[in-house]
Amino acid sequence: MTRGLRRGGSLARRVLVGRRQHDTAASLRLPVDPPRDGQHRTVGMIAPVSPAVPSYPAAERVPEPAPSPVVPRLLPGEHTWKRRIGFALANGCTVASLLLGVTAIFLAMAGNLRAGALCLIACVVFDGLDGGLARAFKVASPFGAQMDSMADMCSFGIATPVLVYKWLAEGAPVAVLAPVCALVAACAAIRLARFNVSPKDGSYFSGIPTTLVAGILALACLLHPRPGLALVASIGVLAILMVTTFPYAKLAQLRRLPLWLVVVPVAGALLNLTATFLVLVAIYLLSGPLLWLKHRRTARSASA
Image (cartoon, rainbow, N blue to C red; front, side):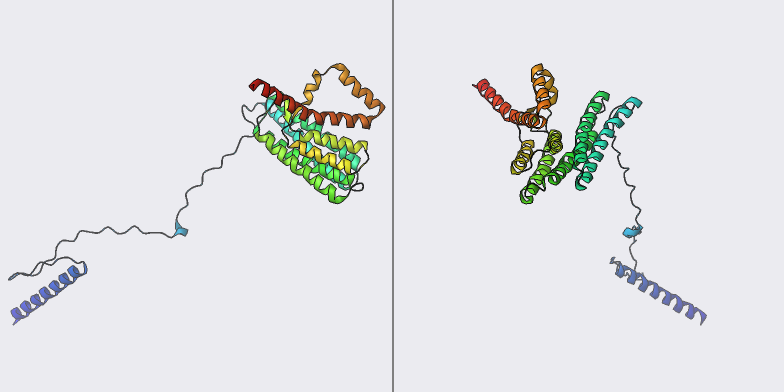
C-alpha cells in the first residue's frame, strides 16, 4: 500500500514538472524536445538576460557642469602700473566727456543755454584728450574705442541737437527745426558707426567729424547769430556733411599753414568775432568738396 502511494506521488510530481517546463518554454517561445518513450520533455538551456539599464527622468539627471565664462581683458598687453594709470586716465577723460554731455542736456532743458554750450565745448576738449593719452601711454584698446563712441553719441549725437532745439525753438518753426535736429542725431550715429569699421587715414577725415560739428554749433550758440530758416538749413547741411565721403583736413595739419593765414583770422576776430567765425566755418565746409574734386582729377590724370 505504501509503495503504491509513493509511486503515485512521484508520478504526480513528474507530471507537474513537465507542465511547468512546457509553460516556461511556451512563454519564452523555445522549442520543446518531443517526448520519447520512457522519457519526459526537456527544455533547452536559457541564456541569462542582463537586466535593462534603468532610465531616470529628466529631473533626476545630473546636469553637466557649465563652462566657466571667459572674462575679456580690457587692457591688452602687460599690466604694469604705468599702463594701468594711463588706461585709467584715458578712459576717465571719456567718462568725463559723457558726464559733461549729460549735464549739457540738463542745462539746455532748464534754459541755461550758455552753460550747456560750454559743457559741449568741454566735451570736445576731453574727447581729444582721451585719444592723446591712450597713444602716449600705448594703452589703446577695443574697449576704449567702443567706450569713446558711446560717449560721443551721448555728447555729440544727443546733447548737441537738444541744445540746438532749445536755442532755435523761438526763432524757427518747430515743424522744420525738429526734423533737422533729428537728422543731426541720425547722421552722428551713422558717422560714429562708420568710423569704427573704416580704415583710418592719417591725413583726412571722411566727412566732418561729430566732434567738430558739436564744437561749431556750441560756439554758434554762444555767439548768438540771428536765428531763422537760413541757420536751420545750414545745420541740416552740417548733418549731411558728416555722412559724406568728402576729405576734410585734420586740425593737426593747420600747423603747416603759413603764419599769415593764422594772423588774419585772429585780426578779424578782434574786429568782428561772429563774422570771422562764420567765414572760417564756411571755408572749412567748402574745403571738403574742393579736395574731393582735386583728388578725383589727380586720379583721372594718373589713369590716363
